Amino acid sequence: MGTLTHSVRPERARERCAPRATFPAARVAGWRGRPPYGYRVTTGADRSALVVVPDEAAASVVCRIFSEYVGGKGFQDIAEGLTADGICSPSTHAHQSVGESAGHSAGPASGAAWSKGTVRSILVNPRYAGGPSAAFQPIVPAAVAERVTELFAARRAGSGRPLPSGRTYVLRGLVRCTWCHRLMQGTHNNGESYYRCRLGASAPASGRDEHPRNVYLREQAAVGAVLAWLRGVRAAVHEVGRGLRALPDVPGEEHAALFRSLGLHMTYTDTSRTLRVKAAVGAEGKPLSGALRL
Image 1 (cartoon, rainbow, N blue to C red):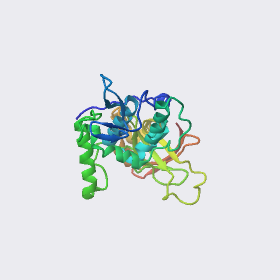
Image 2 (cartoon, rainbow, N blue to C red):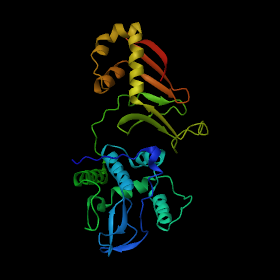
Image 3 (cartoon, one colour):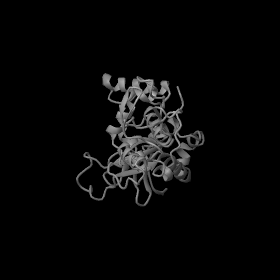
Image 4 (cartoon, rainbow, N blue to C red):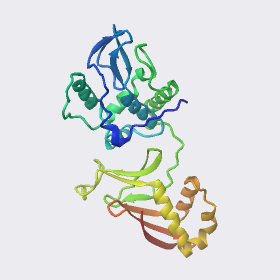
């Protein structure tokens, strides 16, 4: 499978949103209108015709979207990550590009937030892999685009979810949000696993006003804190000491199995970055509890 790289740094994303030269609409090699997000129109080498070329900044965002979807993230997760990183949405990008091509600042624009519909429209656009028109240089490797097509086909076939990515969420089903007491859901961002509670229609009415839009818990920080706590509790060391010592450095199935064997349950408070833990060890299920600051 082709490898995608994206290097849009959040602190520079707003500066790089608008390309140096973008024409809002033009007739190019059979294509009429504004080019898709990720491309821009410029004059050819002989300046006698217009050509469509990749827009470096926007093209890297397109690569990021394909990469994250293949990696297991859903439309909404991808959209929220792009918005959180300050990356211009396609509508804002186009607005700024029009202003620059006219020789003046475009000023404030609406539509800065990404939507899951926008993410989906990019993923289903065949031009990013070079087809169907030869006017567009490919941005995304063909193998990656084919994998996305497979994932969409799996959803249409009734799976309801993308194909498994092989990722293990060690704390799946074990950690709840303090605000609403719902289980936090595993998600992946910037190469790391997180647990998220998102305020939505399913959140209880009580506490909705106080509940942040998103609560995130980094898996590596939580797993490390729990292991350090278990190693410091004499009863836990006595019962599962060998299992603790045998755990690999990278959290995975072994960690998940150990935590479940201990009946581990947690609640996370983001305001104080506190993970409250309960476990039961030994044949009699001796209760243990602790409050871990992350």
